[in-house]
Image 1: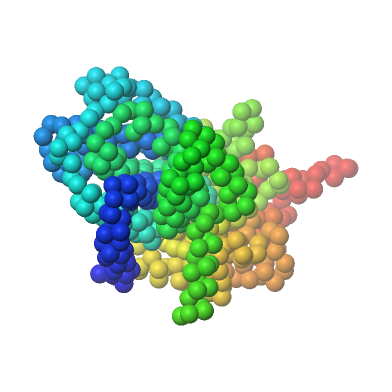
Image 2: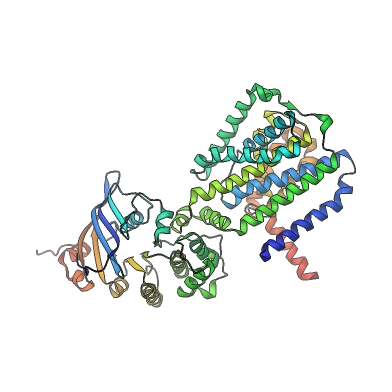
Length: 313
Length: 248
């Protein structure tokens, strides 16, 4: 085991231990356990988005299409009699497959062209899902309430998924794949001239993004027990991921984690009273961030941590 | 074309044509780089030198003609495949990966370039950083490098792919005389390591100094091939650069 792998394993176990210690606090009432579930969901989604959006620089507004595939895979298999946790690998694989199917052609585009293509794919997916009667059509699917996994298991499941997504992100950043992605993000032609297979690197990372996003959809279905196309394939969801990562710090490992937390906080506590205009408020926040701190919160937080360490370490 | 019969061609272009709309940038061009050779490639602005590099390295596909690398046709292959077969290039205006450090940038070439058994990617990268005198800057972020350093970084990144053939595009342009001499010295070391070089350059003292042969282009076609001495005396070359004298 390399020293990096050992350190990551320790950090991962540490994070899980910390979350286990926090569990009694977060599981105190149904609202706080729901907040924890949403936080884990956001971390997973934002880390997954950042792999392709941050490292490869390909901004996707279509991740809801992958989330929805994961949510529907788990729901339909669950309704067919499989244990929900056992459906999760299937959700990941199906979402990865769907991601590769549309990512392969779309990732040949770069920048705004890719972004626009992802909107098209995701919206088309949503509309089609609304018309598949076998999957409940526009009214969606209701899952067996009596088989609810319960708050403790859902908390543990979410914690593992969220921590795993951050470790995957750190591993990708360190790997040959991650180096190739940053190179092609900075200059695709120069990367290709240095031997980087630009198309393959992007599709590979997109498959990982899609698998993790599918897992997120699966987890969402398992804790909400009710899914509809307008929600799980919705454009709002895709947008919220972009916001989280931009707020937290695009292209960094911890940025999506920070952004996921900040987003949840704003959504739950600050903007709850604003109801329908919350997206407009987020839009304003985004403009504010891009103008004042285009690299997001992560660099500032890292600076702060270094300062603390120097003072006390 | 001269060249000892026993020596094989590293790169061979045969009847290569490239048009951009109505403009023919490269017109039925034949060009050979022999094994162990430094071939200078010169010509006035717009002669087609950089276009030829883009064709050889797979950035564009030619409209017709063949390009062979060690006897293998490469004209339809994508850039990264050509790189992995052993042809690397630098860019006229350096194209650094600004978010990376010097050593990470060079590692991109070492990890994705041609596979050579026996040496690790990081050893290769270290060797290339040393060769291009970037040792003191190895941990520096690329955006902090000056022009001369960025040119050497382009060179290091290309060398890290372990090429058989290196295309060098105006690596001396914009440098001061000391930096030009240093760069020429680096190219000599690259050549001594057994890498064939095609060298596009406007800085004549650099290209004439180290080229074994010089291939002169004008309007996308060959106007002269020969030793540096031969081409500088060639009336067609003088005319291409300076125009026809009034009396003749």
